[in-house]
Length: 532
Figure 1 (cartoon, helix red, strand yellow):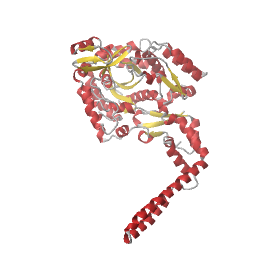
Figure 2 (cartoon, helix red, strand yellow):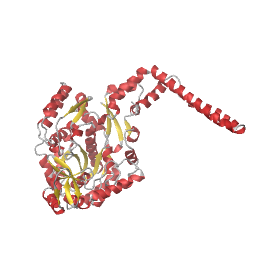
Figure 3 (cartoon, one colour):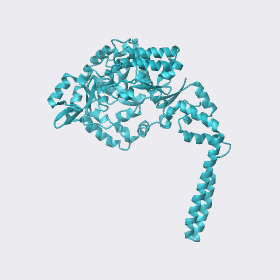
Figure 4 (tube, helix red, strand yellow):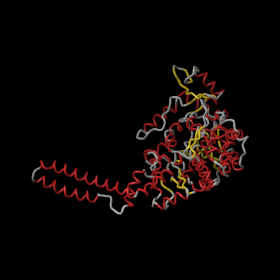
């Protein structure tokens, strides 16, 4: 195949806001700090270092201490251990991605997010060798959308964990995972790679008590040797550092006012999220409810609990772990507790981050560089060979089926299935008739126009009939195109959003991880096609 990369803009799978962001449209520049280019990280390092290292609300030692506690029962690679310890150094910065605790990583792009983060750290270390860069996976342990994470797809079959969850998913017991493993094991069959995947699932979910610990084990097994540091921010000591910002939110609803104003700038786009008046939840093990301010009282939604201002501030000081930032405030929490330079996320994530810069400025916290994660399409050599035989290039396969059919039919046909020339010739004839009508009888103009429309439509119908006939002639090739495109784009969507890594690991083993690490270049802003 002639090319193995496609620009995000040409792929057809990114929203207009992301395309305009990647094109650095002037209208969006006020919504971000610096565009993700290698040369822009020097100024980001200087700004974040000055802001972060002099911020009395943060303590690097707290971060390291809590990470060591979280890793206390894990097998930690030497590089991850060094990375954790290096966070004590004021010359150490982080690159962060976040993701839900999807069962067995969920869709493929979980891997791409983490690899993007790891590879950017490597690239920055080469460019700025006097600094250290640590890849962080921020586990979304405080989310409560269990239905979004309780399954994954394996060869078009849904592997699902049937359980219930009412609170933060990270605290959820892994009880019942034996049934999931039984189902998954039957689908995997036998073999070295199949047995590895079964063992990985068992050690992750059957040998850990909650979903946070299980996910940490899983991500550590896949990427620990690359120095990945996995953080669970559902943590009392880390949330102590966020108390001043939570107070500001409760007292002044700062984020609501700031983000509402910013969203007016984004009115031309579909706004990703809208702020609430208070962007904090109250959480316990089996509960996650919004905090409301009504009639001079702070109330916990769907409960009878309510607090005066004095009472809720007292609760915040004594039990900060009970306060959970929502999607609007979570990024601020992240940047308060981490010496972070860049957040890496998917299009939907970067879209809501673009709403938040003014809120960071109000809180005097440096806004990070926003980087769209890598995207990739995995193809076997057999699939690449099929595409070659069908005279397809990769951009063809990103095209809608109807458009692709028409284009390839015209290409395969021995005839010219395009009557543009005939239509142009017909138009010239009717232009002459219009002039004649103008000079003789203007009432004749309507008849000329009607005849023109009729004949142009006739040519269009003939063109469609010829195209349909040619499609029948080339049915075999076109059906093979359908089959190939459906293999690579399940349900007409991106593979990375549907398939799980295990489907490819089963066939290719750890080569899958190695090739992704080798190929994905986070600052290139291109869709990678990776042949395995």
